[in-house]
Image 1 (cartoon, rainbow, N blue to C red):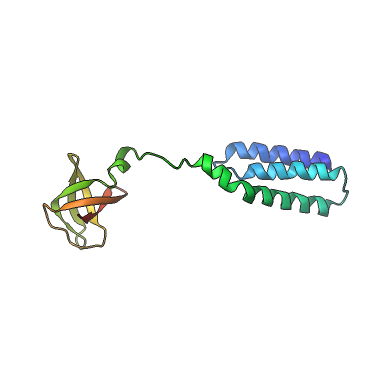
Image 2: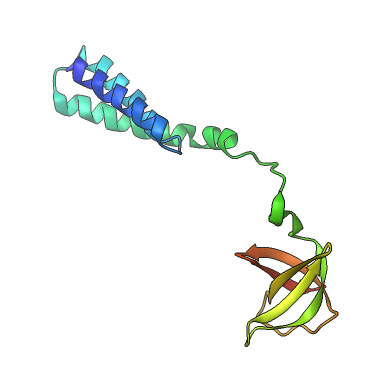
Length: 141
C-alpha cells in the first residue's frame, strides 16, 4: 500500500502547484504520513483514517501561520483604492433616486453614490468610504 500513498502524495503536490490557496499541500503531507503508517499497519481503513486525521490536524493547526505570510497585514492601497478615506467635493448633486452624482477628488471626477442613500447637495465636502465598481461611496464630512 505504501506505493499507492506515495502516488497520492505526488498527485496532491502536483495539484498544489496549480491551486491558488495553500490547502492541498496538507493532504500531500497526510498521504506521506499514511504511507509511513502503511509500513506498520496493514488495514486500509486504519491508513485512510490516519490520512484524514493527520491532514485535518495539519490544515487547522497551520492555517493562522500560513495566512500571516499569504496575506500581508500592512498592505498599502494603490491605484483607485488609494482615494479611500480622502475628501472630495460634490460637483453634481448626489441623488439616490435617479442614480446621479459626481464628486471631484484630487482633480479627478468620479461618479458617486451616498453611503446611506441620502441626497447630498452640490459643493458639499464628502469623505470617500469605499469604491463600488466605477462609483465612489461617500458620506458628508
